[in-house]
Image 1 (cartoon, one colour):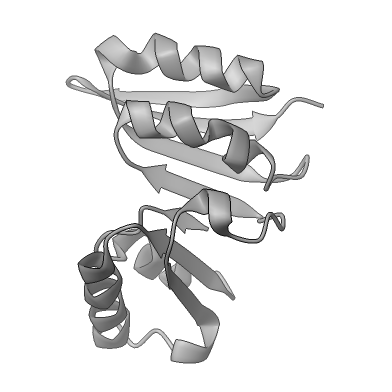
Image 2 (tube, helix red, strand yellow):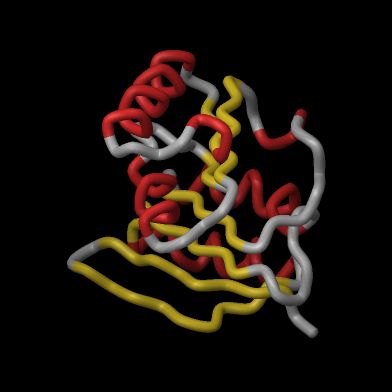
Length: 135
């Protein structure tokens, strides 16, 4: 699941790394069209991709093996409960696009939703987190 898919780059990477099915969401209709074009340019078969012009709260809350969200911290904080609802104990979540000064807000939202940071990477003012459900 790629929340806020934008250009589709994370879905392309996932497909190249062996993902069998890709689901991308964005609340920007232009982003969905751009994602479709980029997936085609990268020879990602259409039958393995589901793209929706929608927000996470109105999609099926089925669990995913892997969830990525490369969006601003406030949006991540807002959707953490919806992300958590789509996880199993084995789901890996990668959250990025987080500026250091907003990291604590994200951490508090993760804790409130029984999610645990398993890895953290910093680059300049940006932070990326790998997260799992607490067991």
